[in-house]
Length: 189
Ligand SMILES: [Fe+2]
Ligand SMILES: [Fe+2]
Image (cartoon, rainbow, N blue to C red):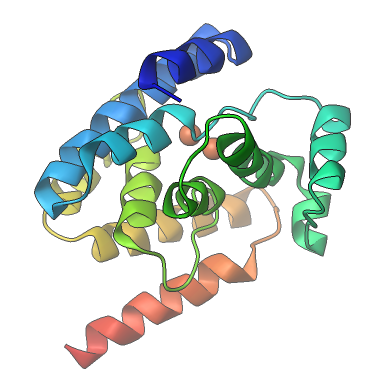
């Protein structure tokens, strides 16, 4: 599908605020794709589409997951906010016709995943550092992202973990394993 068509569908599925977030993430993805020499049209599309399922109700999500034989793990099942990554990935594959690496990027955008490729890393970082975000160290994280994606991912995961602790929410082990992997690679350098 062309970017314009995807834009129309994303717009129709999201509130004004989240649509603006999607545009901000798209813009950030393109900036990062330039720096890290990643395919810009692909980066733009995953940025635009990543939250397409964010405002879908639980029933619709359950049906889409079931129809596509996609299973959620226990922590995902218990935290509805996580579902949109896998449901969004299915929509990106079936409706938008995304390639496998783009589908993976959408699937990985909330928790991250070990051995993520550059496109996935860019979306993960762009999601947290778009200009629509409003957190204290945004400027720092944006600057860091232009120097090291991996350091920025660690930084974002640290913030997410602290936030989950403060809110007494579960912490998904995949994020922790990704953090460990990145720290371990850093130590090898
Ligand atoms: Fe999301
Ligand atoms: Fe997002």
